[in-house]
Image 1 (spheres, rainbow, N blue to C red):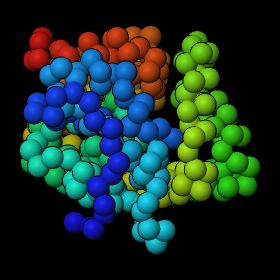
Image 2 (cartoon, helix red, strand yellow; image 1 turned 60 degrees about the vertical axis):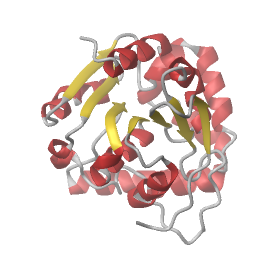
Image 3 (tube, rainbow, N blue to C red; image 1 turned 45 degrees about the vertical axis):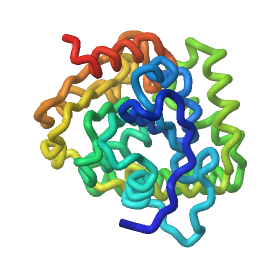
Image 4 (cartoon, rainbow, N blue to C red; image 1 turned 30 degrees about the vertical axis):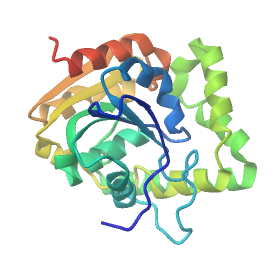
Length: 265
């Protein structure tokens, strides 16, 4: 385990209750999850870490290479020793998946929202790594404002255009990050640099919930195939939602999680 300091966290709920951990996506912070976590604060101790480079988590040494082991080892030092329920979105979902495979004894149940196990084809991996390196250079040369506008103009986030107030709020919050850190994260934590985990999904022995918005065609397409590889998996396509389900359809998202945690059919 690498000697990474614990991550800064927001924590709500009863600390004597079981742990429920939420991992945010790229450009986000632990605070993104507060509206969702409040719904679970009566039954859980909700832990909302800032992942490296995001929010208050900018004290990692400059010579540390950002990779999935660093994120996972730092998370292992952050969380209580008892197994927790772990929810991850997008980048946070990829970290949660890697963590669950590296530290399976630390994860009771796993929820992956809009999460990919990586890119299998080496050429496609290299292409994505190059794309994200160019994006990093664009952040440094043009600033975070222009990048955030470009980022949310992707087809991946097209459903947010139906909720302009939410879109504006998300963009504003993303601007609070450091451009230098965001450039590092998008390059070094690119899916093009992520190990391919699709062949290891069968190693997940805990209950797993896979979520994709029905309007997020890229991730919805892989939902069934990923679930088929996991022994105890449930896959849910969420109506009227795109990539950011918990932000676009919070009530539906919370209801699905409640059913999963309560073992309701």
